[in-house]
Image (cartoon, rainbow, N blue to C red; front, side, top):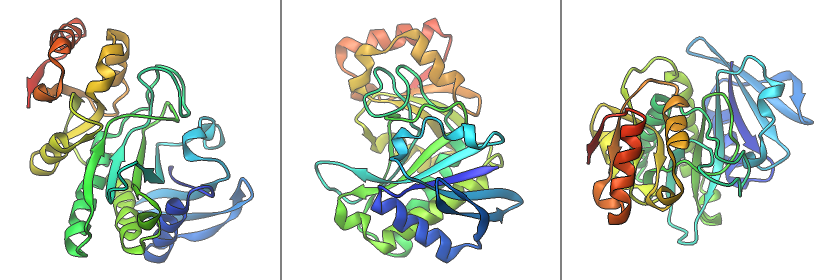
Length: 274
């Protein structure tokens, strides 16, 4: 079973949810979740439930206990940034260090690399088709929850003006359902991304232009606290087998470059420089 998850505390999430209900054949379930209506659909032979949390999505650490047969969780969410730049984004949740915003310390969720790439491609497609003046981007792994199942966020940002943009919400809705539809079907090679800023234009471009799907992505600011255990976890906690690491070489500080190479060699993961 696949779960699409919204939050009552997130206006963008509720707007994306409304677009999903308007564009797809979800029907209200006989059961609710946390006192909120739940919806069900069959999408390409997959059982999909759409539920609404009373809490913020980043705090949904116990969610899988309510759905023991869960194969994939897609959180539809707002994205916030000080810049307020209009952005459609996708990423896996988890923490490389302390759990400052939900989840568990030094624990990342399982990353569904191919499903995330399908969402990213769909965002880019709809940006062009309906003339959205938005950036489309991968984000590096960050915040909670830290789940033992494939988990991804599809986000609309980065300020209230965008959170209430119904056209952009529709693009995220289609991206989320495309991720569901393609789950376990696509076989694009999965890789680990290291380096560069939190919003990785380089990794985004590679995924859109080549047959490559990024799972976990580690930004340059997280490298100083990185160790072999967390790095290996990013490999092991990717749904697909990770073929190699892709390094944004110019996006890694000079003093951190040798560390990255040594850590990759320690876990026997090949790498290439982008």
